[in-house]
Length: 103
Length: 135
Length: 130
Image (cartoon, each protein chain N blue to C red):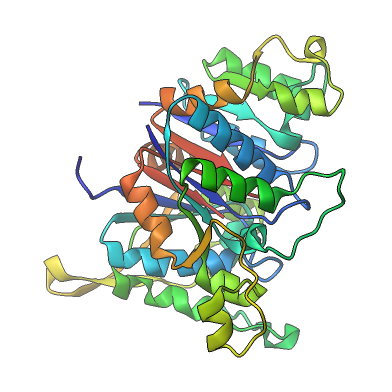
């Protein structure tokens, strides 16, 4: 049994990613969409939190369309974060048992 | 498939600054008629939804906070308050409404609906959900 | 798999309606069933036919209406949220003594129970909002 968490706010502006990570199980998946894709960039003040969670087994994803829209190229994204498109987003919702959308 | 599911409502926003708290409560009240297993979580600024002595008349709004006290009558009696969110905001349970219900399995004894939980317990509550509603 | 989609924000101010639309399309393309789309809070504003965005911008109301027609989607606008925000079908506008109804094609006004029922009947419920 696993949960897909989506986060849509920048971690530099809101605490939703932080709240999400604080209740994430080791087998959870976290998908960053909309403004939250900025939290996936390398060398930010957020990177360490993402690395630490990834080390416990949490899987991270970011929506590639939202990165592209914001002029953020793939190579600037942390290694721990896998890029998915909308089809991948749909697949993640089916591979997990439930979806928790942090708004 | 059983038609009874566990609905978990996650409330993370303060009242009055936006309509989410009020309209979330409206969903909970309507949803109660569907006889599902219902759990309410208040975390982050959502803990402010339950503070005592709310008086929004001076800002021209209706005081809907008294409706929370009726939740027990609708069999909504699993209310989880995130301890960390309270502490971060300098609050304790004394600052919140005491929500109760009457336990029909225990000679209608009045019991508290409120459970103080940590993040690990919150994690379990989320995992127990079939449906998660966020406002 | 069966999905119910809840949308909490209106078009344009936030991206949520766009994201929900793209997700819904992708889910349909993958062969999934969209059991219901439920517009709540300011999300009811997606259903006004009086929206006229500039021609070089997307028209979200039109996109939703077209998608509903192509896939026979059940798109519900919450009645209480719609009354607060002035989204009316013929019955509602007559009842409240208002002018021409403004609900767009493919959208229907109904109660909050439809959201709960969507959660009960669907395998997954997703919420898009601010």
